[in-house]
Image (tube, rainbow, N blue to C red; front, side, top):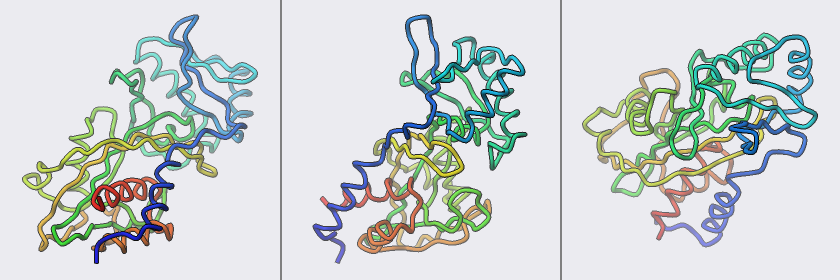
Amino acid sequence: MTALSTSTIAALEEMLQNAARPAPADFMPIYFARNMDEELVIGHLSPECIPFVEELLQKQTIPLISMGNHHLTIELDRPIAVSASLAQLANEMRRGGLIPGWRNEEFAWVDLNGHQYFRVERAAFRTFGFRSMATHINGYTQSNTIWLGRRSENKSTDPGKLDNIAAGGIAADETPWVSARRELWEEAGVPAQIANEIEPVGRIHMRRPILGRGFHDEQLYVYDLELANHFNPTNHDGEVSGFIEASYPEAAARILADELTSDAAFVTADFLLRRNK
């Protein structure tokens, strides 16, 4: 039996409808000032960070960054200059204990036209509420099962939670396609000749506040990959402690029992609803 019940379908649909939540009212908007007449909200600073940043900017000048009564502003400049200013601010906030899980890896902020305007430490993206990008791959079989990976207990985010067979943030110099193939090998041992068969199926925009971590705003680039029934995923990077092969109803039940990360829950729910038609 692979069909989902009516109540399960309704629950998954409702969850997806609430994937992108607004920032809480007490979060400070971060504006990108492209010119005198155009300001774009690109992030949100949590209430815990606001006093620190306000005091910091009163003590020292960080080029291109200023704070008013109700917002933080980043002035448009060459990407290298904006990146340098944000790196300076992020390092000060790290020393102040406001950016946990520092990775020494950069994410890029890309506009809706695909242009990169700056890059900064990956962990700082949630602290600033900047929109990041990630790839998620649904690994499924002809037997109507889907593979889910269990995140290592050593992960700084969502340890022990279930995830897609492979998923990960898109680094500053990567495309979604390159990221997906890399993650498939690192996290699940999927060789290149199989990973090349990934099928792009869409994007999911998710936004939510995370207690003590800021505001998570991310575009999830979603791929499907059919795997042979005899394929067994094997982790190579230590970020996955094991895998389970679940029927579609079991995967849905695990989603609704909050066993998956939020990102993976949205991606898997979308997959199940598409497959249930």
